[in-house]
Image 1 (cartoon, one colour):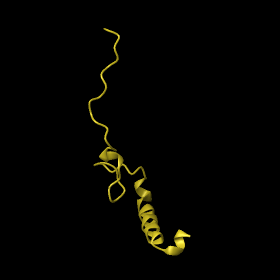
Image 2 (cartoon, rainbow, N blue to C red; image 1 turned 135 degrees about the vertical axis):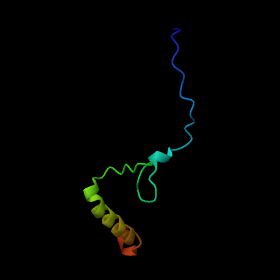
Image 3 (tube, one colour; image 1 turned 45 degrees about the horizontal axis):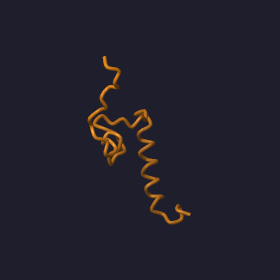
Length: 62
């Protein structure tokens, strides 16, 4: 043992990993990982749809 520190990982860190960015349905990675109980998914999907409609409403922006 020479007392040196271990080598740093060789992978480049040029941007966020794809598993840290949600896809079009809001899920992370190949296994989903939305961190919401399945029983709440319909309510969350409804909330998302209503928010997307409200975002387009100029009155919502004020």
